[in-house]
Length: 240
Image (cartoon, rainbow, N blue to C red):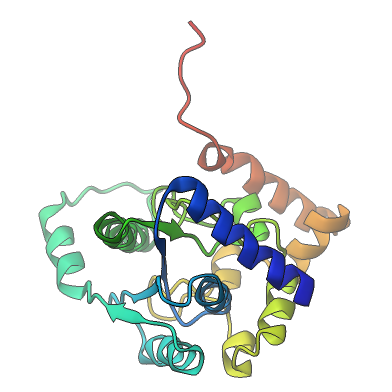
């Protein structure tokens, strides 16, 4: 883990230097992935890294956990409250009805895209790169919002399984309560990653790493990968 941590810190420095930027900005949500990214960014750029807390009808525990990480590791943060912006936008949007639609998911994606806008505004003002917090599992099955948390400049955790992130978090001394709490994007009350996907990170890690899983799990993951292919590619264009 020490070698991995050092290589990721060096990689962050290289990416920012190659882009001609001054530092990095990232969302600090109180989850394990964003906490790991926050600590790595702080190590790479002690004086030019910024964590942004963006509560949007968020639960108090997530905000408190983000603050705990920021205080423990000396991460500079700002808070941008998005509750009123989110509410105003929903009021302005048309009330469309569709039997196959999932209103919670659509509204959750709005929250994610609002946060992306905030990060890119700050990045443009400071000449920073936007650092994403998605891991390999989430990217593989499409468990991210297109042009939301997937809309970033660099992704240091993109080649790490969830268990790898957890091991790295323990090496970096992230508080245990953050490591062990159910992963959640905080998109609506009671929402968890595993509950929304209908599959555990342990099962995802195992299948994506070894190809081994029960038939039902294999089919579900394969379908998720196939259905989310467009998220991992540039927009399709005609071949003529």
